[in-house]
Picture 1 (cartoon, one colour):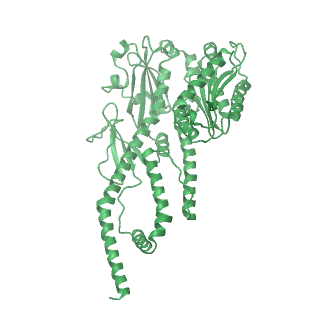
Picture 2 (picture 1 turned 90 degrees about the vertical axis):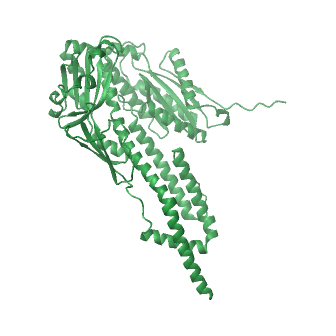
Picture 3 (picture 1 turned 30 degrees about the vertical axis):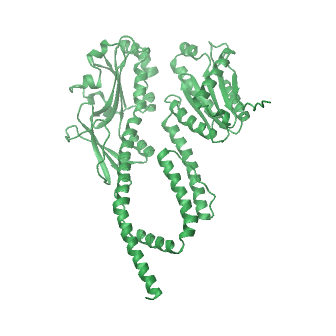
Length: 525
């Protein structure tokens, strides 16, 4: 047999073996694994949509709770004061909070006052005569005897609209005392809320309202997770409202709706290319290409298992691979910034619009990790508005809320650089996380924050200082040293809070910083 014939035969054998091996691997190893991954991804897309819908309604529940547990609301239900309506129940207030309906009921379930965005949310569309309206939507009679807050939430059909509702008993701010009625607020589930959930979750879905007379087996409750049993281009499930009627059909169109086929032009071209390259350049390929790809795969696997963004090494001999890993790292940087941006959008304080305590936990954890990786200094500032309770008691909660908003905006003006985050810690207290190159720059920022609030020049009659001021306590750490191994970000906040008390006892309207340093090594002779 001639050499060229042998090479041709060997090539044919290799080709047949490659096709057979590839087919076996594809159908018995690769395809089942891909099928499982696609199935899991489709299930996660359904779960993301459901959780997104739930999350979009949490601020509605919080808003209803704040309005219901309010001494002034108790007085209003008993007296129906026009002044209270003009001061606290204005249309633009509800529009700013994205409320479509606001209904106040007495203890007997009779409507006392309401706001409706338009005629679609008129009280006539509330199923007041339907069995279960008292008990599932409004509180049952035994709740009024308990003298403690009672909450109901869920979906509700209001004529042509499908809404999410929240109902809370109206009682004193302390959470104890006589219940005088209940507050019901509603917000449409579809429309703007649907668009926002789709943009944040990056999942293509839509909600279709169903007629209340629609019947279907296996209708799910609002918070029951849907299940995926087989791969399909889309999945849908039907949910029912709190009264047990059909409410809506949620349809998710999946990004990956079918398994890939091996018999495509691209896959065949790739197969022959790999076969030729493997035959003539196995060693260079292994060293210069496969080795970097193995590293890339390891990084991607760690990202998938640890659920966090990682960077790849860029010291490769092949320029394209080095540029690819460099571009990947740039994308990771952008994704981190985008992730921070999305977190800020998703975890904002309802009153001030700045980041809330959940955002603080996420941002502080990431900042602490960067600090431990040797990326600059880290610091925390605890900021408290001086004599704020006296101000609230003297001029009212609405004026106090405006002070909180203006102080938060003033702090945000100074903390606008990357690595700086202002959060509302609770009440009139704020927390600032700072990542910087050195503690000197961070100190200047703290001083600017103190001066910025003073510059607001908000009159405070009950304060010895005459204006609204803040007290600041902080702790700053230099770049990471093994001596700080056991220090976590929670203890840093604790130290900053301690410095805040020092500022309070020092007369307020001042700044006290705890500068941590590395202790020099002791030489024992």
